[in-house]
Image (tube, rainbow, N blue to C red; front, side):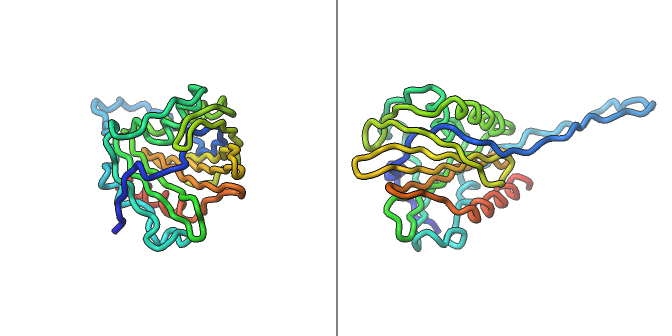
Length: 238
């Protein structure tokens, strides 16, 4: 079982920007009819319901998935009342703020997050699962791609105060239905801040993986992302 800690304990997360999309193509499903009379009845497919918070919690990363983390070092975050959360100024660019909102699951039906304490690491990483009503995640992912395409540098306000971030896009791992990857860079008194984000859509769930380093390159292993993607796909196909 995972320990739970308040959401406010998570630090070093900032609004984000630009990305590269890796997606799946769709085939033309138009059917050709014969000369027979069409049926008077049609079969309607009910929209898929969003996964609940309890269902998302059952799908979080486990210690066996992430050997790079410390023992018992990937607790599930406790959801807090929005009124109890600190209020930061929005990003200077509205598109960058949209990226931050979508990445954080601000309009999701259910959200579950984990803090990842890396072995030998100073700064924690994170993983967030955000579940949406049928079709909404795909729509938001398109909006995310568009917003990231026009957001490269912005000024923001976070836990450590005001900052300026520059974003560089990278090739995303081939996971889920769609994926994007980008880095945020900012300069601190004690070194260059390098924050990696990998955002993956699997069905009606958007997962965000984050890793942070100062003075060296951050990374997030692909294997646990692949495992979690498979679990998310299985859970939504039942």
